[in-house]
Image (cartoon, rainbow, N blue to C red; front, side):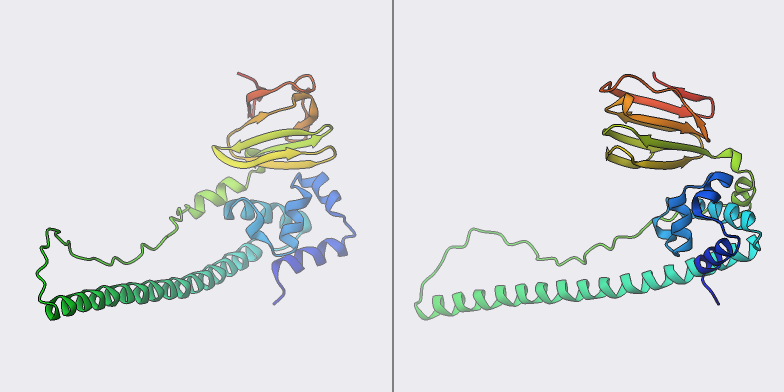
Length: 249
């Protein structure tokens, strides 16, 4: 069975479409489309977004959307199972290593104590011991687990049917600037953008970001170009973006 990425790319090429052509029609970032075609879904924000993008892309290409989503769910479960087995093996090795180190430490303490006791007995020397010794406890190392939130699948499918619910924010950098951006409270990016860079982000409810050069970027919200935030070099500590537009508190 061909991978999802190969099916997507093969179908697109058969239709003689470039990634830029697809973006122009369905407004999904070319970088995200390329990640899907390369079977690199882990680089996307979350499994929920992967399903949203797959639904939009497969519908546009005329593919069987539900079949593709079912295959994606099966592939995700297999990948997760492999990662858990790999993590479990690493954890067992660490526990064994710590146990060996702990045993060696206990044996060393016992040997040193025995030697001291033997020397003191031979020399008939009485030592006053004023120190109290507490029990030595070797605790297992805590295992780090991931708390994976459960998603109501039917509710999610209803949500993704309407792509108009998503907010798409596109930055085109015309001058070097620094930015830190959050979507629905989750940090997406923090760093420097250089002239010519393009970044596209998605959110369900809102974005907020801090920018070090307000005149250094051209912003598009859901495909609509927004006014320049301010002059070059102007710093805004918080800019809020919702469906209503851009607001600077």
